[in-house]
Each structure stands twice: as C-alpha cells, then as structure tokens.
Length: 426
Ligand SMILES: [Cu+2]
Image 1 (cartoon, helix red, strand yellow):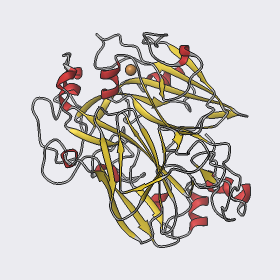
Image 2 (cartoon, rainbow, N blue to C red):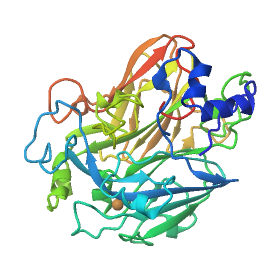
Image 3 (cartoon, rainbow, N blue to C red):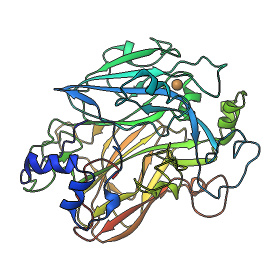
C-alpha cells in the first residue's frame, strides 16, 4: 500500500525519507517529537505493488486474545480455562501474511489469529488481488469450516468474488483462493468472512477497508499550499481534506459464545448478550494503548489485537475518523467538546443531486450494524477528549466497575507536538 501523502512543498524526497525511516531517519528529522507517533510495524497492510496491480495475502484461522485487565470472571465462560497465558478469550480471525516468503511461514500462523482483521487500504482504480488461505482451526480439528472474504458495501460486478458461500464458493481448509477487485468508488468500507457468518463475524473475522480517491495528491478548491493533500472522497472542492486519519472497527464480544466455540459446544444466537464492547478489537482502557506499547509488541497480552484506537493530532489539524460497525448492536458515538462533521454515510459523500453539500455537524454519530460513517473533526484547544458510546450500558467490561468498553481518547497537542502522520491510526 502506498501512502498517498503528497505535499507540494515537501516533494517525494522527504516523503520517501519519512516513509522509509520509521527508526533512525525519522527520529533525526523529527527531533524531540513524541516517539510513539512512529509505529513499530505497519498499521495498514503493505500490499505488494507493481504499477496499479496490488496484491495482499491473508490467512484465516483461530487464536486467543485478551480482554481488559480487571474484567470480573464470568465462569465458566470468562476467562476461558483453555486460554494460554496471557490470554483469556478464544477468537477466529485473519492475519496479514503478505510479506511471508514460504508456505511454512504462513502455516505457522495457524492458531494465531488477530482481531480486528488487518486494515486494508487501496487506491481508486487499483487492480487488487487478495489471496485468502484457510489454515484451519487449531482448537477445533473437528470443524471443517471454510472462510471467505466479503467486501461489505463494495459494488461488485462479479458474484464469484463477493464471498457469499451460498451464492459462489468458499475456501476449504488447506486451500487458497485469489479474489480480484478493482475499486472504483472511494470511501470507507468493511470486510468480513461470510461463512457461517453470524458465528464467524462474532468470533472476530471483521476488518476495515478503505479506498483512497483519485483526487489525492492534487490541490483543489481553496486548499492552501503546504498541507497534506489527502482527501476522503473526490469532493472537487477540498472539503474532505484531512491531516490525519484514524479508523475504527466497531464490534461487540459475547464471551459465552466464544467459550462454547473453544469447548465444542454450540450457541443459540438469538440469546446474543455481549460482555465486551470493542473498538478495533479492544475495550477501554486497552483502546488507548499506543502502537509500540509493550503490551502490544514482543509477546504482550495485546499482541493479537495490534490496532490502537488512540487518536492524536496537533491543535487546528483536521482528523478523519472512519467508523464501521460489524457488531450486532447500534452504537451512537459521542465526542465531547469537539464538533463532528459527518461527511459520508456508507461510503457515499453527503451531497445533493445538484452537488450541494449536506454535511451534518453533531456531537453524536449513530452507526448501525453494517454501516459506515466518515467524520471530520478539527480540535481548536489542546487537551484530552473522550470518544465514547453514548449508550452507557456499553461502557463497561464484562459487568465490572468503572469505565470500559467502547471508549477511546482524542489527544490534542499544541502545534508541532506530533510529527506528520505516515500511516492510519498512528
Ligand atoms: Cu470464516
């Protein structure tokens, strides 16, 4: 995946240095700026690219993750007695194996799924190939479930690659399938496995996809010189330009169902009663653990929940929040003291037929299951602001005391606090 950040004043030389130098070069250029602004590994899948042809390799399997420390036991479901330390919850999920050279390396990912799924980003008009390998379920050799890739909301010309197994095909254990797409419409989408979908989606096979507009890298409308030329949509007037972007996969997690999948039992999904409410696979306060946090790297308890939801920016910058809900509940997300401008719903720019803008300014954005929203915020004061689910029942972890669940922090620094963003969610 190529970063679309092109600024007229910096040129490709500095851009290449910024992109390539997460370590040494970055720290020299950025001086005293906060170190955790530099990710330790890519937050979006780095598609192998030649020209506009981009290829990604994902693996589907099972694994173990960790809900927030201090969540009360709900025996026998939580913590799961089969979970290896430091984990407590059984999941299904995807992993990005694009960079792996051998089939042995890919096979070694079996039993090491992540939630939420790897974040994917493509440019409008790319020829995208996504190879999906089904590695099977380490905990459930009795199950012969397939996996698929369904790009939710994507206008797909070929049902064969839409990932609905009843209408086309799924990937059996031990096999690969390459899906071909050419995204024509910029926007924020989501993807998920569609095999036994109520189960596989709840178990964790959900992730974000975004398509970056052709307009990127050009200056339109009244956009000033010297700023990042990144846009959410082909708006024609620069009204969707942003300095930083953060994406949020909204889900819930029902511990009892996850326990039953690990212990060879079945769930009645009409009893759905989630225990945890998650952003990018984590409940608060895990949501704000930054990239590079020891819990996330090097064998930490969040190593299979690698996507941070901590939002950082400098005062006056415009931040794009990409919100997608693949849970089964409605989630009204509130941001206190900073206006939210909703610019798109379900990957559609809010425009009238005559081209007039119909953006909405609000402090609460309701995101229903299967829906996405694109929101711009421009904080005017340094400080910390909470982004949280306005339904207080969803602000806890497993019924325990204190705040938890679907909440994260927008941290606004004085000008120059944070280095220019090179990847989403950093
Ligand atoms: Cu699946």
